Image (tube, rainbow, N blue to C red; front, side, top):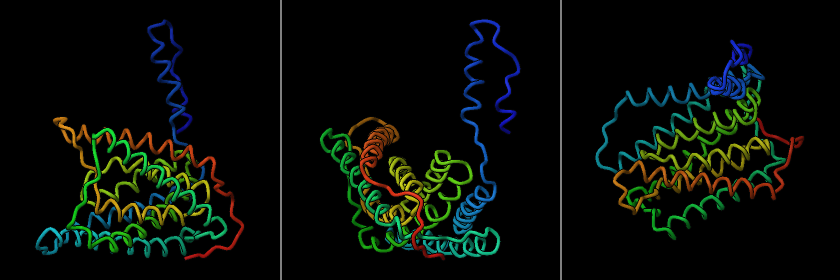
Length: 285
């Protein structure tokens, strides 16, 4: 496909055609080049299994009574689907993919330090801006407080799928930048399934955690961070205090601040040693 994307059918003949020439130059720049077909296929298969099982779970309606039961049912379904997905991935990676899940321990400390630092920096900036500007603030959902342990477990299971398997596969398969973006977007969609809320402002920090995973080559830190993030935002959610006339506008504001906070967190990580290629001990699943 790269040969077709780089092809320009004709040279611009006048200044009015310069815009077309700009499009041709951008086509090759944004094309996706497959570096490792097997790794790319592994990542696609894993996400296909996860979201297919989530879709199938919606067809099996279970009787629930009350709001608390709805939240608990959502978490249980997501947790069971993630666990089943891990089992299928294990069989696939062991017998077909040839590369099982692994958790390198040599870079675990740097991975945990970078992930926790990024999470804290992002959250502090994001919350402080909302409080100081009066535009939004965190609101607690009392009904969900008793489900924090379950939400944490579900977040950890999702983190293993997203970071320990999919992100590493996509990074090897399509490159670091593209792999991080693809895996982050698909991993962020799990928040929508579990939290029953539109949480676009969580996407930037998921991208940063995927970056930490790719840089340290250790999924331990991002997996723990995504579990904490899942449990925290399952109880607290961003609520706008402005009368903007549209809830979507409020979410765009929160997302814009979140992107800026994520850039600040990622820039701060440059001061923290993220480690490198691990030659230390690792546990394989």
